[in-house]
Length: 446
Image 1 (cartoon, rainbow, N blue to C red):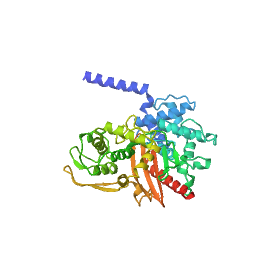
Image 2: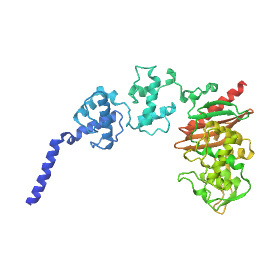
Image 3: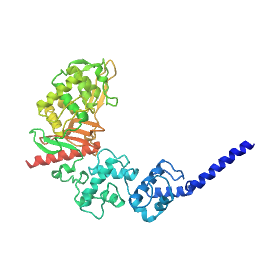
């Protein structure tokens, strides 16, 4: 009994010491009050539960950073000390504490990122986390408007409430040019400032004349638009009607590749394999085409480079036939339209890249396989539908962004456009619509 009594006495003494040394931590109602205040200020910490969890601590750290930078005597610890609590609860600090800064997260950050994307100031995606890229985009936004609105802007990479409201407003009133402010009723007024793509090129397919460009000669990752060159090169080397056997190298692709699929040992015509490669954008099919045409992926890539040189594609270098990110694998928007222009003069190339539905005949490895291309620009029910558009090839990786090369024909005018590095697919469709409308307006003036 004595030993048990001593044990409980020790525990009691330890609890007393904890309360004496850390009195604030024992006051759960105070933390509950602070959490309710954080929630009212827009910090997404879950629910007020009186527990100093990870999100509450992160929010307190942001609060302390803002207060310390404003000259208050607080330590940035993430702990709810009395000085932080006092300053957090003061109404006069509300505007300061609603400021978004690196480390912030949640709905307001997502909304700000979405607008920055629409203004072409941010690349990537709206992920709700205020990181380095978002900070840089905000900095550029602030610099753009600081001269016009010095009383409303502080160039510091943070979004104070007034700056947030300004960001979400119609900035065209202040002469800010961005894709979101383009007047679709005036297609002839299109300039590179109104395109979402990092790189773009529009040509008259008949004359080869460049009608509009944006960083068209800067090398960039092409993703699966690479397969334009794969198809063009293969057609110069193969017999489309020949029956081929899929090689083992078809499976030697990155694990997250798009697949048809085709399997080693499977037999089909080269024509079917080429249709599958373009419509399904199968990396396995691209590898198979390369090996069947040149004996190896490396040898075929060299042939692609020879073809590019012959066509006058001055800034391209291909390492593989499928376009998956690889060191040294680059092309440009101008080079892509050069390749597409040449390809569209070839009947089978043209048939393949403008085909929306194709059925691969059954093989010894599978039943018949229907292939369908469902891009919104070809869907009459979609807001992104572009009547008179045809083909050619899309591409996407996380580092390349969304890329597309397309053709357009109306009233005897044929256009080819390439866009590269679009943050979202819908932005690529918007750019294509604007480029084709611009091309038609230019044709109407001739």
